[in-house]
Length: 199
Image (cartoon, rainbow, N blue to C red; front, side, top):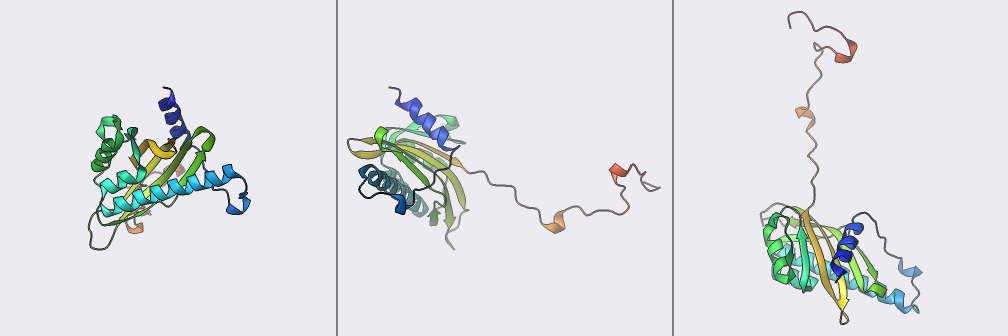
């Protein structure tokens, strides 16, 4: 009954931390817990990669299937559905539809992070998801933030919660020729000098 608040807390905490993969040379192949953790991380990373690739093709049904959401998966987002959550595979499909993503694009997850806690049967991920239209496909490049929590149910990792939002794009740097040029006739306000006569 208290799983939803715990999942929400895990998702919020994830945005404030940076998780680094343990190098393979530090893993003990005889330690079953370490091997299982790495296998789970690889499985979830592969699912997120398949989600990204399917979105790039414009195949939303395949993207939803890649994450394997449960019927009660909590789908949250910023800037759509008036902030109200949706649920399950249909809720995830509706959220993706609201984003108006380009078709015929290349999907990338350049900073994907995955972490697992096998003892609690919980895993989570966070990434920027970039959709870059291929030449001739039209549409604008899109950059999203995607994070989610998986739980293991009957031996299978299922998406329990996902958050989607558009990544903030920094304001473009102005061209040098569009910047105001210093005017030799304009006094420096800090100097206390009076403006030239006639102004």
